[in-house]
Amino acid sequence: MTKKKLTIPQFKELKTQGQKFRMVTAYDYTFASIVEKTPIEMILVGDSLGMVVLGYDSTVPVTMEDMIHHIKPVVRAAKNTFVVGDMPFGSYNVSVNEAIRNANRILQEGGADAVKLEGGSNVLEIVSEMVKGGIPVVGHIGLTPQTAAQLGGFKVQGKETEIARKLIEDALHLEQAGAFAIVLECVVAPIAQLITEKVAIPTIGIGAGPACDAQVLVMQDLLGMYDKFTPKFVKQYVHLNGQIVDALTTYAQEVADGVFPGPEHSFGLNKEQLGRLY
Ligand code: KIV
Image 1 (cartoon, rainbow, N blue to C red):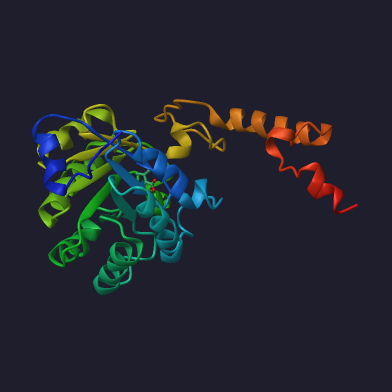
Image 2 (image 1 turned 180 degrees about the vertical axis):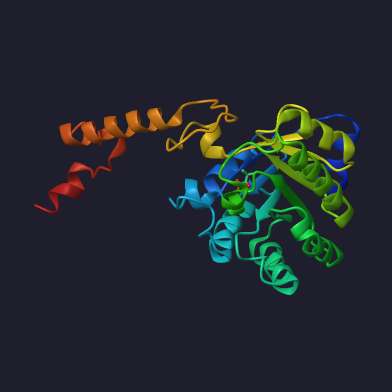
């Protein structure tokens, strides 16, 4: 299928028209080129790569180098899909200057179209300075995995009135600071709906109900590949983990039995050429 990369004003226009858009994570060339063949408008090179690609227990150990290493091949593959690069833990909590320097790297070295960073009131100055500097920013509130310990673990956000109020305020402030979209992660659906109604920029939900302007899922979750744990909000559209295990097991058996490679997978030599060697 042919598609054209959407611009930031076009994403905002989709919200105005009540038209949903789609985002999925990708971390390498192969998967990004597959996304490129679909109608999905946005790729997130998320720091979730720390868990699903690098095997860490959380996103905290992910570095700027890791992010850039993974953003580059995605950008090479997905020429017609808008690519957002995640700011990893430690890349924006030292100073505003350092945050901008790191965001510049994600755009210049990585080639991403925008950056995403976690936080609400604590990151407003950073978001505002980035936007003034010409860096497109996606906010991320609700369950923020980099600081999940401060939230009391990986739990749904917005059940308590105070926290719900803060989420709404944070979303409005992020919009004022210049973010062009906001990821709402693990937010109770009615509060995600309220936020979506109150802000003019698109909300991108993950575990935040159907009212959000867009949805995002982690690729390995959506495809049923990551089997360590599956959150309630994940829908597995296929169960690739089991299918890959079956394929690899068959391959292993065929090699052991001498069935693979067969003649159709081998390169021959004609009799004359072979004769000269005897
Ligand atoms: O890193 C990531 O994949 C994310 C999504 C869960 C939104 O931040």
